[in-house]
Image 1 (cartoon, rainbow, N blue to C red):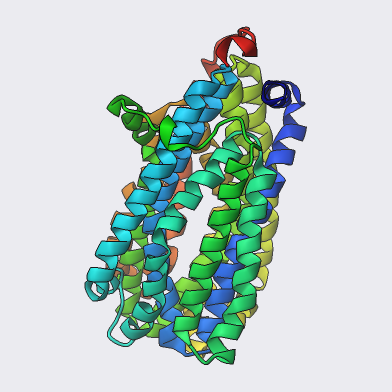
Image 2: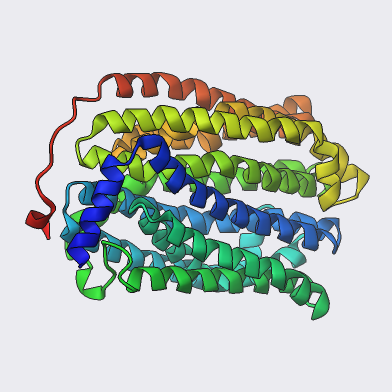
Length: 459
């Protein structure tokens, strides 16, 4: 029965019309990412009721969550890309090895971060950009995020194994249930139980753990080709190195995202808690919009990896252009809306006039950047999916590192708060320009399609 399921999944991934396949994989991913971002914004909304300093704490803890996601996506994207290509080559045994190894490594790394984060909580929150007035709220919120760290990091692996196998609906279920639970628990814990910022932290930690166990059940219940077991953990350090190498672009992307958040908070803090709160709100709103394009790109990832492994390079190319165009239409539509009602959006989360004033220009600028993101994201994900790790790493580093870090350090010195507001947009435009020649050269050099051996030979 398992062999029949694997054969059916292989045919789905390599024979279903590319647009239909990407939509079927991308829509559940978009939904799960939107739900995730909605509950992030719900946190921002409810914590904002506690005051401007508390609202700023959300942005501080967002940097901590970015660190956890950096390691989670490194192991998840690294293993997921390899698993998808191995299944495209009909090598199920290797898929089991990489799935199990990445999962247990991720849980261990999350536990290490939890221990050291709790031991050095105050300096960690200060490093992430807390001002003296924001620090108490950031510590109250952050301690529960650290307690959930092992589950958050390894959930990223489980989510990506499901996605890269082409089973994004299962991943969607785990993430959406956790997200909905968080939205329900936030007001109950914060205001019903009068726990304040502690309640927001408990709600987020609880929802992350629930998502973890749902995703784990999907892997243990026989719904996937790859299996999780301690006996499948590799004894070859080269296999671990391969996971890290393929996932390294994700570590760079998410890690630099955390660094950029710290620098952004630090530069905004010069202009007061209102500026920190405004940029925190803008980041949450734009991540909500960006997640739509990111979801389409992640729907393309298993298609690219699976078909690249199967030698069906024409489908890789078709999938790229479909995803880039669809992402442009979706993100562009939401960006126009964001520009049009920017003041109203900021006001929903915090009615402080100082916060709204800073947030309007920042949100409008980042909405403009949405027009440049789909092709850049699609190119980056294509490279990571097919194992072009160097190019993927470079493009991953460009948006939040190579371009953003110098800009966020230089522009505020020249333009004041306006420099803080426009830095990310300029970084996105420069990253878009950098991605174009890499994309054209890769697609032009894709070889003709090749045939693959039967699945039974690799069971």
